[in-house]
Structures are given as C-alpha cells and as structure tokens.
Image 1 (tube, rainbow, N blue to C red):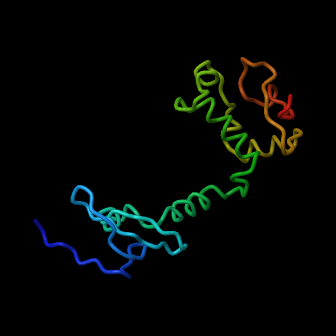
Image 2: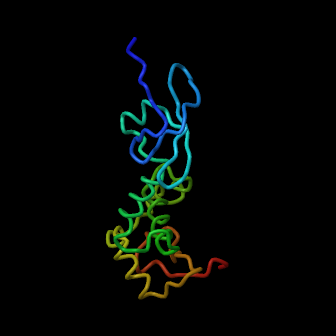
Image 3: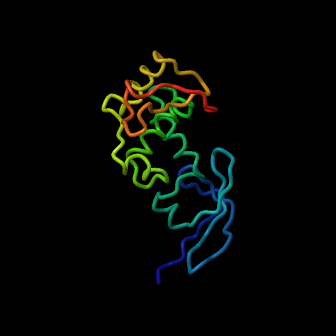
Length: 153
C-alpha cells in the first residue's frame, strides 16, 4: 500500500479549505472543508484530489447561472413555462411525459429557442400568473393553438 498523504488544515483544493479530517469509511478518508462562499461540507479526499469536487456546490450553481443567463430570464415564471412545456413533450423521464410527448404532442420548432418563445409570449398577452394552454388538447404547442390563461381557469 502507498504512503498515507499528509493532509493539513489550511490546504486548499479548488474553493475548499481543509478544516480537519472527520472520518473513514471503507478505507476512504473524509475531511470537513470550508468553501470560499462560507459553507462547510464533508468531502472525500480522493474526490477533491481528482478535481471531481471543487466547492460545496456553489461553483456548479454559478456556472449554471452564467450558462443560462444569455437572455437574463432564467428562473422566471415565463422561463419555467417554456422549460416545463418542453420537458412534458421531450423528456421521457418527466412524470407527465406519458400525457404529452408519448401521445405525440410536440413543441413547434420556433419555440425550441427560449428567445423566440419569449418574443411570441410577450406579444401575445403573457403576464405573470398566466399559464400556457392548448385549445386543441391533442394538438401541439404552437402559436395558433396556445393562448395564455389564469391558473384558476
């Protein structure tokens, strides 16, 4: 077996700073670390050294935010209407896919881009607290088949 690595408090791996060794499970070493953002997390040494874990999770969140902010509306209700519509129709792992995509209901090509969907929605009556519906429940998500309705309706 190789020499045991001498890991000391204060050593850094990505955004994580070692505070102390906490436990061993199945011959794996775990350390309590403090992330640059202030969160603390117990992390397996091998994962830190391999670069698999670089933060408490804040780095991934930041990268996702940057990647999804080209239009500046990630996380808004309009964005989630679009995302959920696509998920229902395109993602077989979505809980309600069987009622949409599995039945052949699709999203029109223009709406595959959030920006195009946003432009259509804003010029066709979209407001907060409205939901997109299909006039023909067997029809696709496309401009001629989709008005905005209050959630209560």
